[in-house]
Image (cartoon, rainbow, N blue to C red; front, top):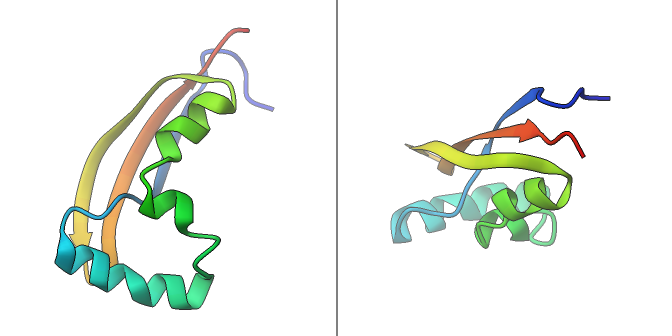
Length: 80
């Protein structure tokens, strides 16, 4: 269990930053499943962190890779 005020840092696939990155991400979807990666495609990870009780949630940075857009996220566990 994470203590209030603890930080969570996640590297995961983010919303594609362009048509080329979206096409590249299809390889990941074929391996991991379209249903499993739908939240990534829709850019919903920040929303999911908020729903899980985190605050100060933000996407810090993105990188283009051969498999799509990699995003770095930061969140702080709220005290409630």
